[in-house]
Picture (cartoon, each protein chain N blue to C red):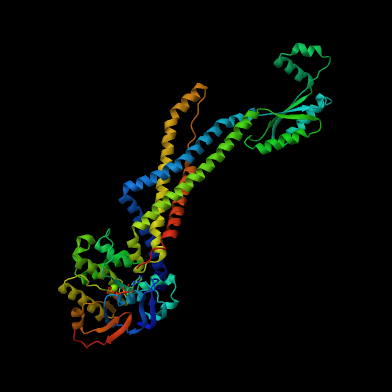
Length: 226
Length: 319
Ligand SMILES: Nc1ncnc2c1ncn2[C@@H]1O[C@H](COP(=O)(O)OP(=O)(O)OP(=O)(O)O)[C@@H](O)[C@H]1O
Ligand SMILES: [Mg+2]
């Protein structure tokens, strides 16, 4: 599903964020990405979503060779990828419902279908009762869950999450990781960047550690211990 | 309905309706946005309205002037002074010949004797004429052009042609002031055109700048939309419709201003016409011209937003 071959990413500042990265993630896998601050976790996720382009190397995501993917085809490519940020990137002048509906509107769904899918996604993150609320009136955890609902509403093949539990309390963090696990159960490939080892280690998923932009450790999943 | 056709249709149908739906959403959304910021929308559209009302109003004024002066066409005439050797009969023949021209309304010969009588009557030099031993005046053919004087080139061509008719000594176009008036009006028309183009450019820039600010204010939204797979066309659309709305609403405001000014002028114009013993109904813009103004306004709005969108939208990429 995701393939990195000798991928190097050097930012225009000269900073090498990833060097000679080799990585393979199968469809339906759930992978945690850990490492110190500045290790290159966000950069790796951005490369997958084509927010950044690799400086060198070959990347294949969701069956598409990113080297040959033209600018025009990026939107279609991104519709198969759900992205969740630490700061949820919600639109503050629109209701929760409208925020979650955005990917469907972009993809040109009909009104009834949008209503159905948005409510299903909100139900999944237990926020159905807040559909008319505006993001500012929600707690941080609720906002994060709206962001998750928006990322999954289009049923993407790949889900990317960058520090999704950054400033949430442990209970809420566990709940959100549980959500990702659920999406993974139904076949979505999930990549989560997090440095909260206490939280992710017990889940027994594959863990990839980065250090200084290089692969330091790749620990396979420990069966079904989660 | 046949099962097979209904099976094949939904695909094209669905895609077309999704496209339409997306346009309809942008259309409504962009209008809703103007509605949600009424004060700034009103100011922008008012500026556009004024910029459009000025040239439209001037154009209307000129049209009215033209309509008023239209009646003066008939009083224009070309006098052909014939050579002294041309007899009255030859003058009559020439007049008949000239009358057959397409661009001539009528031509009338005035014989030498008649010319002398007329001159005696009008000039007051009767005594001086008596002192001469012959009739010094030539025969004259008075030609009424059969075309509108607005066309100075064709009038000039006519005078030139007539001057070269055998037996014609000199052709003189009377009422040159009518022509001067037309020349002035033509200059004014050009002026209005220039002002209109400049103000149109202003509308383009006002809309462009408004949309540019709008794009900057919605930077986050654009980034998010790009991140979740919005095409450039999708992101562009509400801004382009926004520009169209600015144009159309500004155009409507402009038309209302022109109509209001017209109403304001109607009473004094009637009084003025009354003083001349006539009656004059101010010419209205008319549906066609009003529609053109709206169309131009819409095009300017679309153009302005297109400029802004082209310049500033591609700068915004998700980080
Ligand atoms: N846009 C950028 N321009 C220049 N350098 C950048 C840019 N983004 C990241 N970097 C650099 O690349 C390196 C990797 O950054 P990245 O954001 O991938 O780290 P990270 O593992 O996500 O860290 P954190 O845990 O703090 O989020 C860092 O040294 C950072 O300074
Ligand atoms: Mg990061």
